[in-house]
Length: 402
Image (cartoon, rainbow, N blue to C red; front, side, top):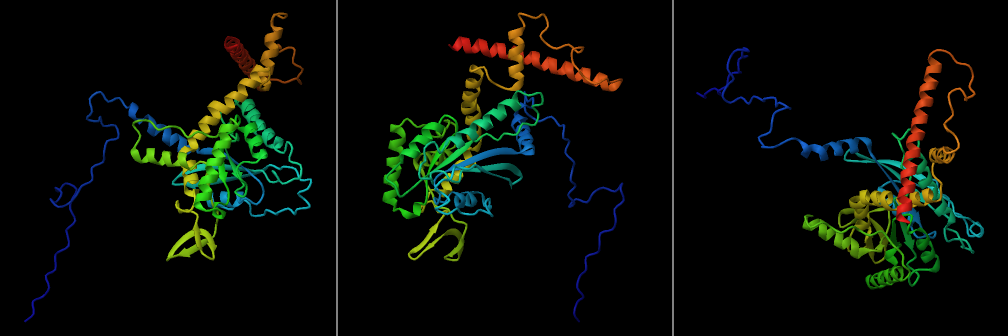
């Protein structure tokens, strides 16, 4: 006679007062304000976490400019870098249209999110650069655009409301070098000499798949020698600290050796040995874009990923400060700074250079509206007085430097 299967009884419901069974795991809620078992612990170690949370919540802004002759694959490389199509409606101009064509500034902005980190990416393209018969001063519109962004940031920074300043300053410039030449052209040298004190220049050898490895290495040495001979300052990768990890030090060393970056761009996905890769198909094989043995694309992408913050800081601390110092030395600046300068100049001839509330011609107002206008006026007067003091300190510092 077959024995019946042994059925384990269902657990009976336990009353709230009954003790927990030995095999049951009870999750204890952790007290968020418990004192850690660390002598002398105050909590300053959480500051990086606070900055991280605030930065991620606010998001980041980065502006990349691409400059180079038409046909060097600038648009393709940007689309490959950021896995997006920034130029879906682009129409290529004919040779006849390029005869008298001037350089345009084409600005595209896209929001990119990766692992919860949001970046407002602005790509500034310069179609028409180097395409005309006479390229004299073809880069003036590019310089003007960079200066306009500096000026706009200066005015916003000196304004009354500085809480939400949009940073459209150009943080990095990819300058594309034609691989068909034997180094830099006179236009390349002149452009970089005009802009190396305004923006971080990263030289890029375009369409590296048209050269052999020996030709790429020879052209890189030639370009670097010409950059040094002409006193051009490209973006310097910062040196690593002694306490950095060895892997990061090796990564930075390889990035420095890769300058100028020989890249290939492609958004086409190919099947190579059962593996999906982005590359370019040729009769003799496939150039894999993300293969470091084929080109420097992955190193260029790593440069943006690991040094984006440093590019932003160099723009703020070096290029923008140079522009700001020149503007203030010339007596320029924001409208508030100009008003403060005028007030400072007239303070010797007038006991009260600020307009009184009675001197302002305004329509008659009553009640709360009048009080609001008086408060706004007093706030603006206080802002102008602060600006006057700041301008006096800056002028004193400039005199000390002289």
